[in-house]
Image (cartoon, rainbow, N blue to C red):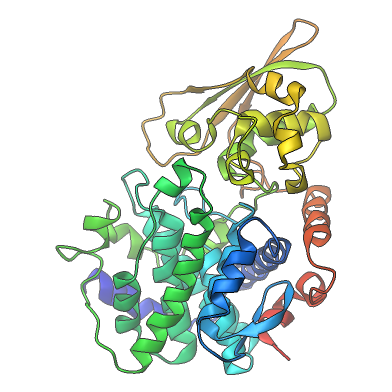
Length: 426
């Protein structure tokens, strides 16, 4: 059986999620909806909404965190942006894929259009979509060039949508593949095009399902073909993608992001939170090359909020000063703060020689304290990962900040009954 055939068989199978897998799906759905509500007025969100409002007529699907409804594809576009724009959405670290973001935005819009969905059916579709999205990244051996959360995310989301909506799966996958877009250039420049790429992928997943259901043709050999995914987007082993489908369930392997900043900053920030308010003179982080590439950028007085979210030198000073990362501090006044600028110059990231181009851990941090002492702390797993889960207090702090950032008019079920919100649009 070909890899594509095995993937389609898995995506279309009648899955009854094991209890632990279903619990993980509910947990990460709640996390994703909360951060989406928190992102309703982040930089760029108003423009995304304004343009989405021109994408046809209709009120098929809700917008995360605010009133109003749009056609399903347009709502997926808006909600995908809101979920990723604060860099607060869950990630599968070995895959380097924000596996919930595109899948949740696209699937939620289609559930709304259908008028609701049985919760078990919705969770199974969500888990299937995450399995495909994270599996594609997990099978990759090359460093990121295309923005993998969008490319892999669109393919996983299209299969989740098609599974739920009764569209033929192979054409849906092929049409999603034909729609893939988004590169790491947006990350290098800290451009708002980065969450736009998630938004675009979510809309593309809905469109792929709709076209497949309408009988539109699509390429089939989209994984191993001469111009397939593993030839163009990521070098890798497609066999790893399908080796343990339905057994492993990668949704149980996701990491929660405790802070609204790039995931590559969180190992250091988790340690620095313990030292908040103390006299730390300098920080050195020994880390894999990908960490330096993602968040080892200099702090600048004229930087943008999207640059700040990916700037560990700035984030480190903010954490030591405030004990948390609050996006409401991503302002010109904070960026020009002389004390934060001075401390940022004393934060360095050094390559630890890790040969894996996709590795995010392990890391080690060395703190130079004001009393002249030096402390080195090994970080084998990043805070929020399965090997270093958030404490109840840390999880509550994230939820409380998301509530504070959400619109006062947000549907309260987003925080009290997220699965009910997701599956019952009434």
